[in-house]
Image 1 (cartoon, one colour):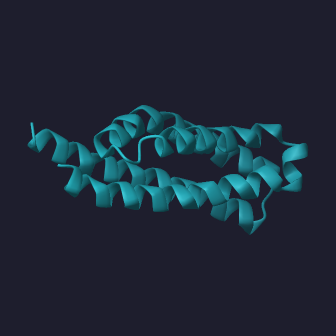
Image 2: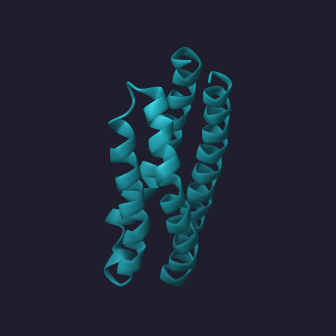
Length: 122
């Protein structure tokens, strides 16, 4: 089972790298001083990333952790859509929202694939 889950972990890590870049952009943007609520997405990505990286060597554990963390990241992304629009109409913010939405969608799809593999091996 681990052999079939490992490529999915690798893909999730690539998706999380995109989320991390959104985190870095928001964390260091000037707008965050006037809109501290933008830090919600920063915290959600950091928390998810740190939790997942502890499970990379255990693919089944990785997806168990992703199942726990994805809801928070999705909620933070929904809030980020609102907060980013209030903070700035600049294309960078609009693209950051789209990027986070894509990350959540991709992670959800990968989680479903992993859960199907895990269920099939039981």
